[in-house]
Amino acid sequence: MKKFNKLIKFICIITALSLMCIGFSGCGEDNEDGDLGDYTPESSENQTTDGGTSSFSVPADDGKGPYAVIDIKDYGKITVKLYKEYAPITVENFINLAESKFYDGLTFHRIMYGFMMQGGDPNGNGSGGSSKNIKGEFKQNGVNNPLPHNRGAISMARNGFDMNSASSQFFIVHKESQDNHLSLDGQYACFGYVTEGIEVVDKVCESARPTDNNGTIPKSEQPIINSVRIIYK
Image (tube, rainbow, N blue to C red; front, side, top):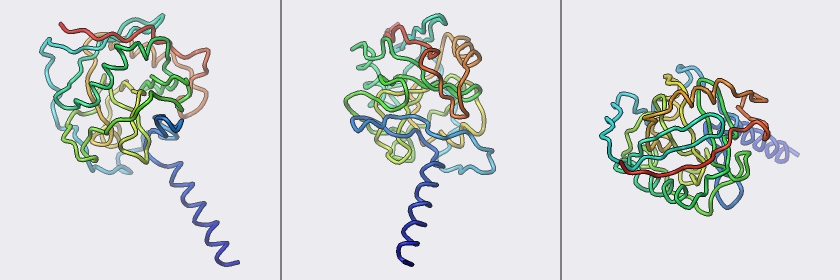
C-alpha cells in the first residue's frame, strides 16, 4: 500500500511539473507540435537567467535577403528579415515550408497581448506540424545563436521537453519585456526580425479575444495567413 501511495504521489508531481513547464507543448509527427502550453510570462524574480542573450544588439538590416512576407487576411503584410548566419537550419526549414506554400491558409491560433502571436499549425490548435522536426538552434541546445527575443522577433515554437522538436509553428513577439528575455532567450530559436509591418502585429494582438489565459483563439476568429512568400532584395 505504501508503494502504491508513493507511486500516486510521484505521478502527481510529474503532472504538476508538466503543466508548469515553460515551453511550447508538443511537435511533429506524434501530433504534439509547438504550442506554448500553459506558459504565461512570470515576474523576473522567478526566472532563471541561464541562456539569456538580451544584451546582444539586433543586427542591422543590410537590405539583403532572405525576407519572409507574411500576408494576413484583413490585417496586412509583415516583412521579416531572416538571419541564416545565426540559425541556418531554422531559416532553411522556414523557407522550404513557405516556398512549398505550406503556410498558405493556416492561422494564428494563439495570441497573447503584450507577449506574442503564434501560428503555422495545420490543425489550428497547437497540436500539428509539418512532416519533420528540426534541431533547436539556441544556446541551451549547444548552438551559438545570440539573437534576443525583442519586439518583432520571429522564433520557432517547440515542445518544452524536447529541444529538437520544432517543426512548422512559429511565433512573433508583440512587445519586448525582461520576462520574455529571461524565459525565451537561449531557449528558443529566434531567426529573424520584423522590418516592416510591426503595426500589423500590433493590430492582430490588440484585436484578439482569447478564451483563456493561454491565448487560445476560437477557430472562427483566428487570423488567416493568406501566404508566406520569400523574397531577396
